[in-house]
Length: 306
Image 1 (tube, helix red, strand yellow):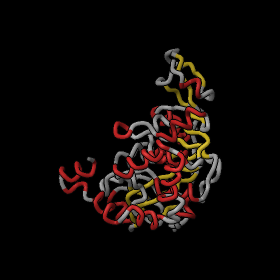
Image 2 (cartoon, rainbow, N blue to C red):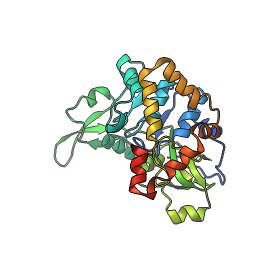
Image 3 (cartoon, helix red, strand yellow):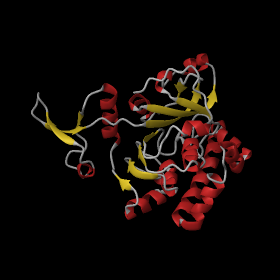
Image 4 (cartoon, one colour):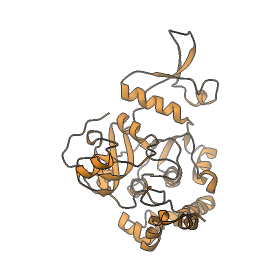
C-alpha cells in the first residue's frame, strides 16, 4: 500500500493515466459490465501504452478493448466476456488462441488471498481452491505448504502487489476519498495492495458529502483522481446509469469481425475522440440521458436492455 498525502489530487484525465507506465502491473476495478474504469482504459489506448500485465476478477470490454489496441502482454483474470448476453470476448479469445497475449487464468478467491497477503505484509497465504487443477500449471510461482496444525498440504500463493489500480467511483473529494456503490468487487483490496491508485469519479464533491455517502477507499491510498462523468460507459455505474447494451453489442460485432470493423470502432470511439468530452458527444446526450432513466420503471429498464 502506498501513502499519498497530497492535499489536492485532482488532475486531468491525461495526467492521471500517465501514472500508468509501459509494462505496469495494472489492477482493473469493477467487474463484468459494471463500474469498469473505461475512461482510463480509453486514455491509456490514446497514449499508446504497451506491455501491460492486467489483473482483475471477471471483466469484459475493458480488457477486450485493451487487447484489441495492442496494450496488453499478460492477462490474469478468472473470466473475460459479456456473460450470457453477448458471450465470449472476441479480441481476448483471438489473442489467447494465437498466443499473442499470455493468459494466466486465475480465480477470484485466489486473487483475493494474494491481495490480502500483500496488504498484510506476509510472504504467502494458503488456499485450497486451485489444488489439483491446471491453474497450478499456469502459475509456477505458486508453492505448497504443510499446515502445522493438521498436516494438510495446501497451495501457497505469493503476494500480489499491483503497480497501479484503476478505479471508477461515483463520488470523490479533491483529497482522494472515494465512495463506491456496492458491490465493491475487488476494488477495496486492490486499493489496499497497490502502490498507486488512480481513480475517476462521476462527481467531485465535498469531503462531507463523501463521508455522508460512506468512504469506501480512503484518501491516503489514492494517488490521483480525475472528474469524468460517464467514466464507466458503456458499462454501468449504478445507481446513476445502466450499462449500454446497444453499444456493447455494436462493439462485440466489430470485435468479432476484426480488421477494418474493429479499427473503425477504435477510430470512432477511442483514438478518434481525443477527449472524454468528445467521446460523450459521439455517444450522444440523448442516449446518455436514457441510460440514467433506467430506474424510473420496470418497463423502462426492460426497454433499455431489450
